[in-house]
Image (cartoon, rainbow, N blue to C red; front, side):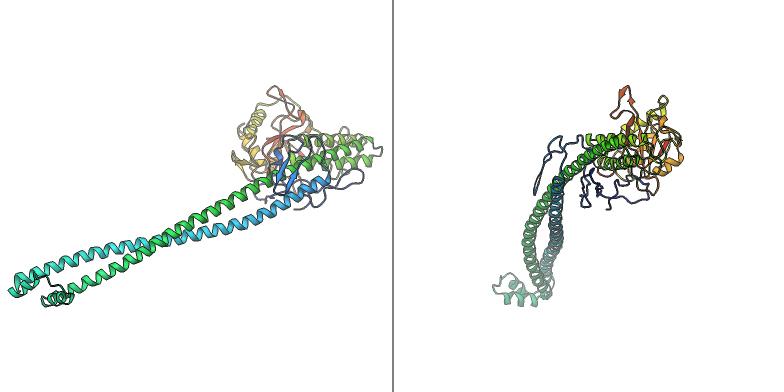
Length: 476
């Protein structure tokens, strides 16, 4: 993953998703601490953090703690990154063990299934042999009686009932009566029956041993899975802590840059400070959208942008700042490149219905391509929300921009859409404007309040407006 400030949170159904985000804060003399190119990949639920301060998190390799209200140092962030790397290595090793346990369990299941099949086949063969033996014995009796009735002499009959004691005598007697073949069949069936019984006993023993083995393999598999799940949970906590630490640091950097923009006398210096504040705000919002750190960073970035605008900076000099490419005007007010938003006319019923439609999905996790209560992406949320107002929109941020009526940022109404190009390749993100008042109550960020599905690892939430990458506003 590169060092771009914000992943593409919504880019239509055809664009690939990024599984995580690797961030790097730009190092600038006198203004920034450097998170550096080694910043950790963050994919957990950091976006839902409700406060700027981190909470103590104990991992397999130690404890990462940032005091409430303090700005974490680079050493603290590096230590947390080390924790993340260590736990990820541990998870990789545990996954190998789990894979092996799964394979052994699967093999034991196959072996037990084969033994049970063989045992069933053998039992069926024994039943067939038993039935055949009974039939052969019955035939033997019938042949003896028939021979007596039809052709046997009194001497032969007396031999039948003389109960000879020797096997050779019995064989000679029956052969003399013409039923020797039946006797031989009886003997063969008995031998086969004994062999099948021996095989069945062996298979029963194997089945018992394999059943025990299967239980052991299953226990090993469950233990490995439990260990892996615990490590994954710990990793998510540590990544959340890391995200909050970086967001807190970014908020502090944004504040420092805003102060520099305020006191600078040179317009170029003001603009540079505003750009740096914007970059820090992007990091804080990406990692911890909705948190106090993100709100603080956004406020600082907007303050820095205002200072730069007041100094008369022009469009095109804000590379990477809190600029939006269509905000403001070249003939007065905020210049192009420095965006502000404000509410205009009275809210329209359709827009309010869309906002309430979006609110139904508060807390729903971000899911690229999603458009249901199981998960939504940015354009999916907007599509579902406006559907509540009876308006059909495509499931694509770029297409939604194309079908919307473009409106001024100074005349926004609840339900209006703000479109972004976050990586310079075209519109790839959309949020919904909420405004300062909703249902008679003040909103969290007043006139800067939006609602959005930001990116993987976050949930639908109210966030403060930001202007980096802003293309313009539209009304469905």
